[in-house]
Amino acid sequence: MGADNWVVYLLRCVDDSLYCGITNDLEKRLLKHNSGKGAKYTRSRLPLVLVGVSSEMTRSEALKLEYRLKKTSAADKKGVLERLNPD
Image (cartoon, rainbow, N blue to C red; front, side, top):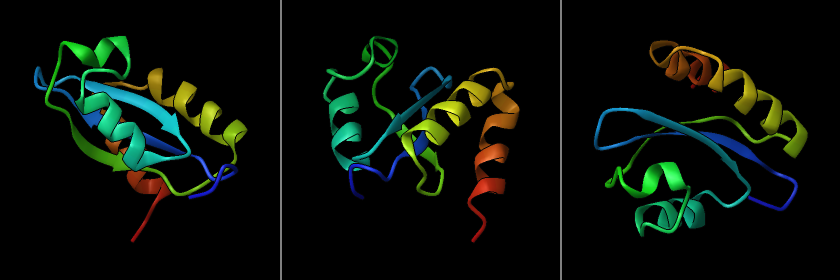
């Protein structure tokens, strides 16, 4: 994944809540989250499990999708990413 290839990801926290974020280096970002040095929200909700990742897009597209997902109900978030990333 290069600097221009961003993804939106969903993490399931230990309290069963979902965290949504964007990155251009998913592996590095997941390590940071699970080490307790990621987002403030996730620090007290470890361990975290990756439950969804979008396909690669521009940073602008990723920010727009993240904003849209954060306004979506928890039950619908994973479905949104699955529709964007069909196998």
